[in-house]
Length: 90
Figure (tube, one colour):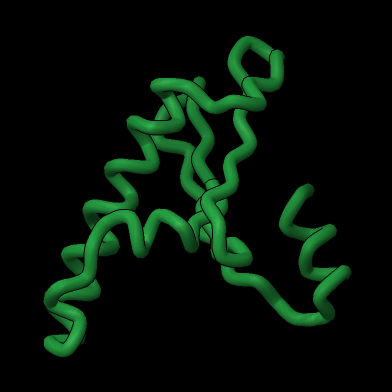
């Protein structure tokens, strides 16, 4: 829902990775505009400030992406997790 609005606003397709690892969890990750952004709901209530559940998932995503970038591009071997986190919309 949110990514569709951003795609229409920008006029270009924004990549989105979605997974439902458990019947009670849904996770979607995309690119942000230069600062970390999150949208989350717990028991149908918006948690606008995030929480430990957001940090838990974000840390796992950042860790995996950092490892992939370091393996693929040797020139980015000194990339820091915060550099990746600022580019995530989760």
